[in-house]
Image 1 (cartoon, one colour):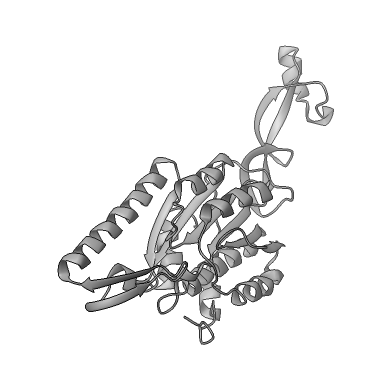
Image 2: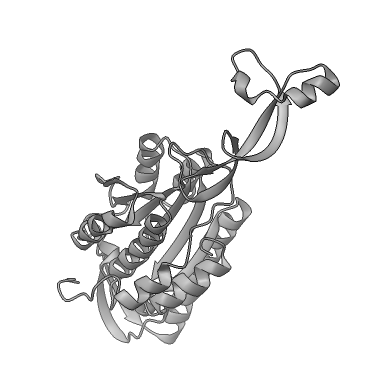
Length: 297
């Protein structure tokens, strides 16, 4: 489905609402530059956090001489450090995403753009990668609000192509990105390779993982009848079927089982799972759903 008539990714009024938000990490991360956020990491900034024993090679400037005077032992002061957050988005651009109105891909682009804008407003380090049959060349890291035009340009130029292989993409992603942070995977998860191995690659990196599962309303509640010839958008497999009420019920049961299985698998492993359709108002997803799930505040 062509996207030439797609609406803008973000409108000015919505951008103003996003300015008030920030992305949240539930884990401890190490950044290379100091941003506006206070992390849980102990570093060398201004707010005291704790002590630890002195070790050879430690900076003598951080020795707590008052403690030394009381205990005759060397201790280092540890501080809370202001640091940037690495925000990764892994967006599915396979052909199955080019379906619905708006397409699942356009909806995913909107999510990616909104998260990028929130991150850039808070001086986070923002990176976007896409995948179909593998990991595609991604958008270079950006880290200031003035770079938002690069994000929009990159996303607007994306086109759906190829079949989905999240496993290959996640493996390449884990090798490519050394930094820790938040990764948001946006996909319909219609992938014949499955999702377990793919998400395990991300779990092994100790990333804070959010899965946004996007389906079209037509996929959730298909309005079909009669004899049909169905063609797989990605590998062109053909199935000739007669649509009946029992068949539609079986389809919905299988879909519900798949969605429920993915949610359960993620939840058991500390991955935050969020389901949405392309008909769910986009601003509601960002301002309500992602707030409730703890990704933004």
